[in-house]
Length: 449
Image (tube, rainbow, N blue to C red):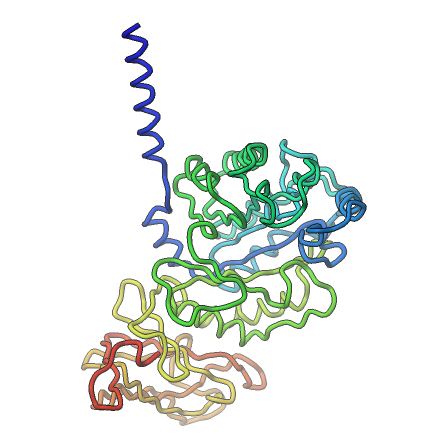
């Protein structure tokens, strides 16, 4: 009897210790890795892209007959014959993206992988292939990290279990309150994190309590973004956020493919957004919504190729960086090399700084010295095409009012010389010079933002 009691006590103690040792956060070194990357591709794609509906949400509050049509008819016609994940991955790499986050299961509950947990999945469509597996393999082949979006809420599960279909409007929408839903979600998370190799990133779009801990148990190096860090959608914070964070943006007005009434941002707007996010210490997760046939729509491909050209020139200022002492001075944003005393200044070009023109800058918050060196990313500052004898050299001077830089915008990227996107100055061996307030005293770093 005593031995049995002792065994029970020891078992209880071990169980308590296991619970206490359960991973409850991202590993710090993995968070640093995530912050280094800076730029990722978000992919929203499911079988309701065929009708151009908002992904999944058209089920919320819908009538029974609509939900029945959604569940039965849309999978029966989903057959993306033009799906070429390698072309997506190459485009992402060219654009400077370092990782992908794919919608393995959105709120509808439709699974884009070969799952044994439900028949509401990609294998029960005319396509009959594991789309998620192909995407993971293609992006890994291009050297990109791979991540999965996962919705703990599951409209198909709700409907089949007579739970009102909606988002967090019923206590049974929360896995923590619904043992059956928790078991269902855990079974799916287990498939995702045991059948597809190393997954780098997991994005829980919904109540993650009990699920993220289980995910870390399966893959301790996993970075959980939504559910563990701030992930604002379609808006930017006014100032830097401490630690890792990720801003999620669409190119148009919707996440999934929207064939009509969907004006897109310009390439310059997206590049400027990327710069601002990086200056504030965050990552940009930029969304694409593939067409139902498996192609990326031409508007989004064109934007990614414009970003790709800018990245080919300026990638150094975006990856492996951290925020500088201030985010910007006037309309010029700053980042800092992670392990070097180098600052990158992102200067608006286009009409503000035309091709072939010399421009002088006074950086009041930068202090140079005899070792300070300034260059333009991607441009040698020696020649301007078709202009013999033109002086394209960079001149610098450390003055009482700040670091003075004189440079020429001479990198020819478009035939008509109308490249509209920012030029990046690389400034080595420079110190922060606190700005002077109106009373002549040095102010805090916020004064120059």
